[in-house]
Length: 104
Image 1 (cartoon, rainbow, N blue to C red):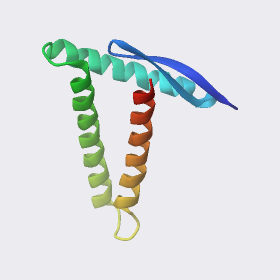
Image 2: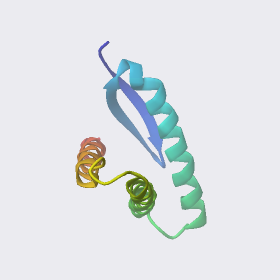
Image 3: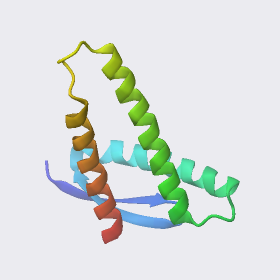
């Protein structure tokens, strides 16, 4: 399967994101969840610009992820789990998403 362009709405903007065709439905579902959360935060924090809200939400996601990774790490036996490798992979994914958003 090939790449497809998917239009997603986040806050007041429309983004064109490329993904594998088989990932299109998941991307739309994630984008809808993100859009709902950003709209909720925008409603609660009317005096804060959308870019700041996006950064705040990203930090909240990273905090949740860090807590899950820490919990998983504590539950895994020593040597079976490499936290730094997972965090580097996650960082690479976040950089790709950031670049895609900046390009739009």
